[in-house]
Length: 341
Image 1: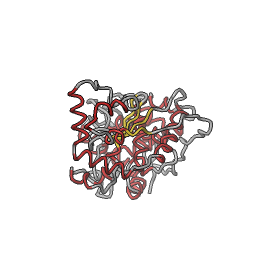
Image 2: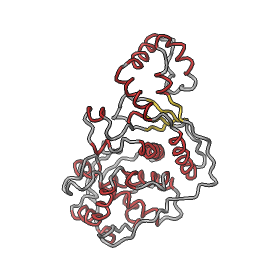
Image 3: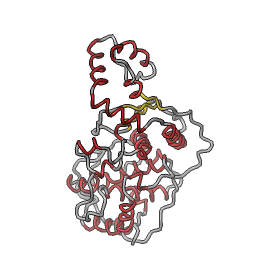
Image 4: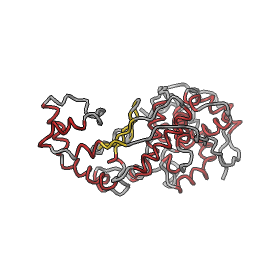
């Protein structure tokens, strides 16, 4: 598994057409993904706080109090509450000191989620603009127990669940204690909840075709990032991709050199796992480009290619992009021209 996609080996393809679009000056990309959603109606969003309700339960009166919240939180409480083993597991979870401490921090930091409901409302409006049959999901917050191996926001059909304990701030001590690096904890803040919500919606619409080459991989990620653009048109690029402003500036200043390097080293059609990992996996920086570079710079490049492709495809809808699975076609028809410093 590389990033969020798999790839298989594939023989190197021709590079001829690439040279026509190699190095050329290019101005800032306009926000052509921004649209007018004033006529889009969406039901009011409410975040149902499962964590808060669960930890308010008196475990000495567990069964009836679980029954009282079972309807509102059916997504989490589908289990048979008549089964004593299920009740024991729930009681143990509620009484776990570490989980209880996490809940206390969450309830203090996120006493009011009105701001988040408003942010989600905006995201769902933009999403519905592109997918008119969309209905806003039922949104829950919960305590994951710092399950950092799972996505912090998950969208499944008509439900979205948000692990608030994965957004407790870059300096949250428990993140450091389990060894999470700063380049990850920087994104574990309240501002990033909306980005992860948009990402979860994108993953629901993005066909999971196998990534065979570097080009396949960065274009797939680029499509994901463009979907986030469409749901968060007025959000800074740094927030969408999780870079600092300095790292964004580094990418812009070094875009043409990076692209030239990928062409010169024949990386775009490489199916080598280590090469793809180097440019797309989480890391504090990209090996070979200095400590000022961010990790995942291949994803940045893929994002810019997809942006230019969609700028050239005025008739294309967002879903058309999601179902365009030929990365080489996207690159060719983008006319991608990296910025020159």
